[in-house]
Length: 382
Image (cartoon, rainbow, N blue to C red; front, side, top):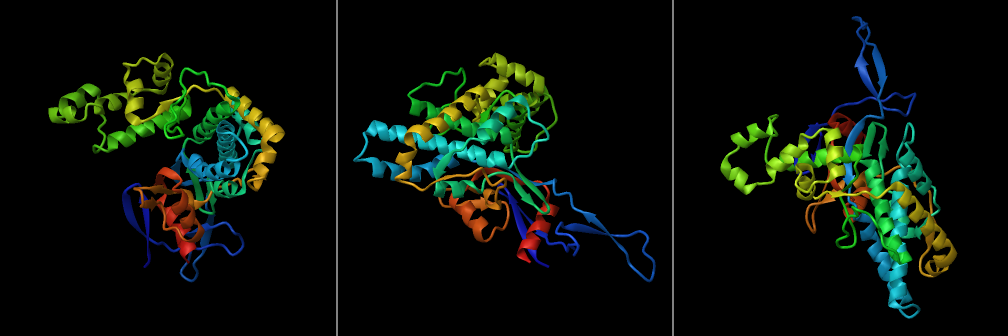
């Protein structure tokens, strides 16, 4: 019996491969169930189609990925333009290119989403996904592996998809504003350290879910989370633990906040409130940039590129315009665990392994349905 090793974070489990059967009349995998009507002389089987909408795994993309990819083409652009343009002009074109790469990243991951209906905000974002953005061909190919992953056994979903997509557009706003020589005016505009920002949340449903997930990740580092009041926790935890981990109870209390309370706390933004204090502890960045602003800036960038800059870029790169592939690749479920080490959710082979090793696209992943994962990768190995 062969084993498959599936990992989630630093935890690795060994799962035995199970035998699965597929119908010869359909490409959709099926589960086989013995019929209760079977008699002594014959065995009948009932074929039950697998629900491919079920989630196998989920992952959180690294917000720095487009910026990391941009650095390589920016270096080439600077080299080609050194004797043609001033430093300021080259910097302006570099900012434009980074903004375009982030818009294309948005287009790619957005193309993998399925909506039953669009909210007003999502309808505005849908307009951005239809912009005809050009990026260097090599970048376009690498970005084409991002987004939700559809398989015959279920899906692997991007965590907080709209938040992730909007984070790409905040980068486009930052670099686009720099290209236009403008400043971004917002009460809460995230800092850009090392050229990018990350872990953004808005005051919405996904923001609340993301905040809760980050609270649990933080609390789980200290052991099982007890269902107790803050006073009970304060009295039961040893003093030495309080002294060494003064932030624990702050996050614990913030994690107990209801959605309505959480919305009110962010809107009032009291620096002494546990929810607001927890943002810094968890490394989250509260953002208030509206989708109308993002839509306006991205549209202006498309027009400016086409009217004034496209020829310059065409002389250096093979620029490519694509809509987005509508799906991501398995190699996304791979993350760095050091400068020269990485971990992956599944035993990848071939192109998925190369993609994951090269890009380290995720900062977090978890397998949520191990039975489906084993079925999928058993088929790949076979």
